[in-house]
Image (cartoon, rainbow, N blue to C red; front, top):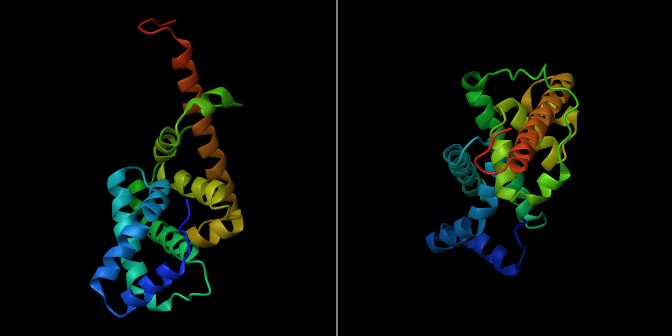
Length: 192
């Protein structure tokens, strides 16, 4: 999902900078779904996503005067939302420290048939279940296409930690997808 660029949008932005409340309301509505979709990728639940959304949109509006019309507005908003999610992660890191024991998980292959049956909301829920450190690295790498070097710099970790967290996130997601496959293979009400 991207924000469509238009002359109308640029006019709304100019009005917002001047303090026009109606234009600010229009821009808020314009950005809301887009910004929420980004924050949801980085958060464990809708409440946390809304907190990041709120912080991110506040930054969008307070820094709107810095936006250059030569740039993609959607790209500018995306960058702010991602950085806000990273800031939120860093701020709450000590509360989310957890280690996932994946030592017993070996060569789990996700069933592509299962993936094709899932809705995007179902896949998002699986990503949201990842521990925060794994979710952050996975989303930055797989969705935003950051390199491990860029992730390490943004999160204040080593490249090795970034690679390790991505690997563990993938294993966890594969394990969860295989669990879904197993449950689909079982007849209703019967257990093997």
